[in-house]
Image 1 (cartoon, rainbow, N blue to C red):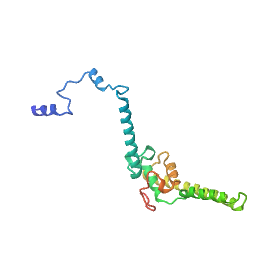
Image 2: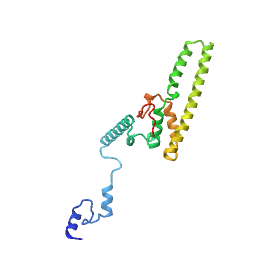
Image 3: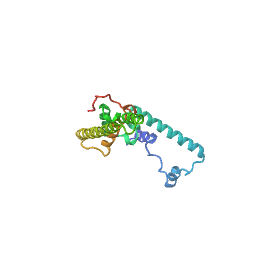
Image 4: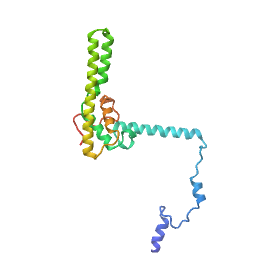
Length: 185
């Protein structure tokens, strides 16, 4: 090795050559931190600010779909695929809450013993049955496509997609990034 190489290496801050190895005691002292900070109020404020910033990043990620800052329950390529698949299709589950609210309001207005009240009750349970069938068929399609694309299906992805299909589209988080009819590939 030439003298110029040795000089360059000793000036390099990444290189430890030319500097004596610190003793164990010196290394331990450098790592020591107090269990309780000296200024507890400032530490608490800094922790609160950090938590707020992290929550703001997570909220922006839920709006934009940025994978890095999404909550753990929404991370991963399979969950993104399931989200996009559910958002691309029309599902009956989106409107079950509105229909249930309408049925409850109509039942309040109608006398409890009328045939219309009984008919509304039957219509509601038929609608619930159709939603269950629609969700089951959608889960099978998602499982088939995930298996074709990724080789296997991670645990909980089908349930994740099914629960997303029961939410009204505008209320879904992370926000839908695909339009209806634009199926993921």
